[in-house]
Image (cartoon, rainbow, N blue to C red; front, side, top):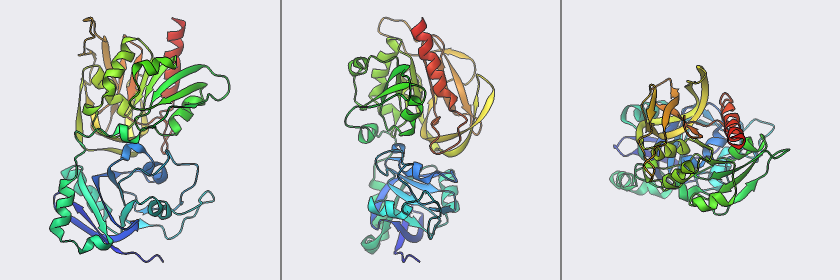
Amino acid sequence: MTQREQAVLVLEDGRTFHGESYGAVGATVGEGVFSTGMTGYQETITDPSYHQQVVVMTAPHVGNTGVNDEDAESRRIWVAGYVVRDPAIRPSSWRSVRTLEDDLRDQGVVGISGIDTRALTRHLRERGAMRVGIFSGEHLDDRAEDLLARVQDAPEMAGSELASQVSTDEAYVVPAVGEKRFTVAALDLGIKAMTPAMMAQRGIEVHVLPADATFEQIQAVQPDGVFFSNGPGDPATAPQVDVLREVLNARLPFFGICFGNQILGRALGFGTFKLKYGHRGINQPVMDRTTGKVEVTAHNHGFAVDAPLDGETAAPADQADGTSYGRVRVSHVCLNDDVVEGLECLDIPAYSVQYHPEAAAGPHDAAYLFDRFLTLMTDKKGA
């Protein structure tokens, strides 16, 4: 059995949990959030949307299937820290090539195990997501008040611009599978690998661009549509809102997910706000108001759009010439708490959802949203 060093988790309100190190030994600080997925931990930790967050896994047993070289959603692990109750002694899967702890240790991700993650999750639900620190090794020699001060001095998620830190540095192309039908410019705000793969399977050639791409650089791709990805940080700080307004003004078909949904909301003139503890996991119920169908969906967001839930509303934002973006409606809503989960523009070709239709990991109930993007581009091309 693995011999582990002692470790402590310190929350910004002073509560502490004592356990054992998991992954790298050292110190880390980030926003403490919990993920309710029973599976898919490899996709979770490699999701760039978790940048600067310490992820608490509510599933008690983690690491059972190891990790492989196919399921990572980006080039590295992005979580700032990792919290599990009962790590697997050894992985059991024909696809496993190494243990989860190997990857955490090799990439310097500090974690903690052997704590009551149920109690920690309840604390975060009641008090809200907050900054936490994990300390092990030589850091345990520091005074408790000094560890708490390190946590309280860390930057908060509200007001943080993080998409630029996780985006690609250079543009790249994911070619269409089979016959090419459309070209899409995809802004990488923390994109997951499965997203362009899902579009490529539908005959879309995806040009993935850095987060700081200009509208002129988007136009240079000669896209049939534009996509804004998921990503970390506060949408109120996102400079991409102005770029998206240029996309909307040009009437280019637009599809956004997660952070892209929040940016569309702000481009249309709606506000955004920080949720108490967010939605993270692969089992969130959402209703598609277009069909009345309830979907089980994958989520990872701590902010949401503030838009009227019922009926159609005029987009608050006006363009430079005084014309508006027209009518907008909330197309999807979370059945747990009535949070806006999707926006649909009725007078311009644009829509978005707050969750992850690429479902890596997660259920595939929402894969049809990529087909709606095809329809949007087909209608525009035929107009």
